[in-house]
Image 1 (cartoon, rainbow, N blue to C red):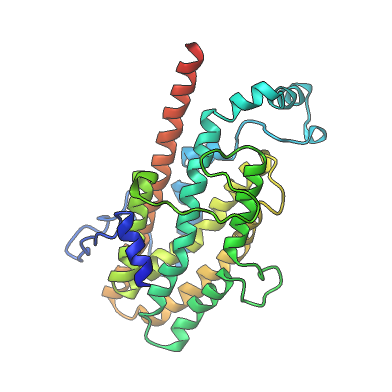
Image 2: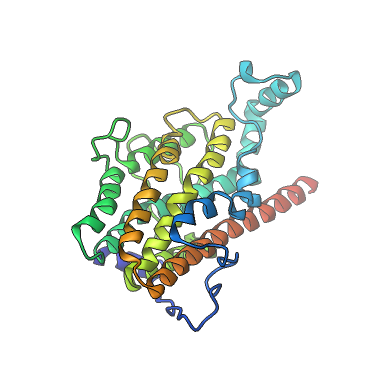
Length: 319
């Protein structure tokens, strides 16, 4: 755990946030209001209907330009011609430098880092829980992350699933800065300069809440995260499929469409066991609000980069 916190310091994200107090507005850590969130049991509905799922970056990702698509899957001649043009040796090298490919690579690197951090946040929250009964659901989640759950279809460590996606995108020449050879480790960022500000803030919020705040804050963050991820991942999967990514390359996101709903329910059961006071319930809601803020900033910065890259592509084309 100490090594993880040292790494966070290397990325300049291990700077403790001021803990909110009940004297502050309930929205102190949220872009969207959370006053409509009643009991913790409403978190899954709150996540499923959250405006984050309509974020412009997510909507853009699920509708990428046609690349590496099987011609027989396309309905019109125009679409087939588009793929043939994209496969032209000279034009394909230009397409690889377009805004979409570069933004895809940025997202991939930042999103992998968040996934890599997740078991540490999970462990930190579990270590604060008072009884084996409250710790076990989070530890089961941790086991699944490492492919040790014993469940059918969940026997592969999640980093291995990421490896599959990185290797496939590299083989398709969709990665340049972060391309890897088969069997090569996925490199982690070495400094904050490799992070978007929204990613840096995301890591700061999650790390501080899970390591420094009472367990209820972390449970709120984890409950919202596990509740919204199945719907986020459905949008990501739609984009990966349109890019021609194989089922193997999609595996990480497909698995989490399935298992994260169960994880959310298990975390809500833990919250029900420990949230026995108005203060603890308030802390859970603040954790939810912090998760919203972190994810909003993450996608805002990805979309901001995409817009800037598109502008650069247009301007270079004019030149």
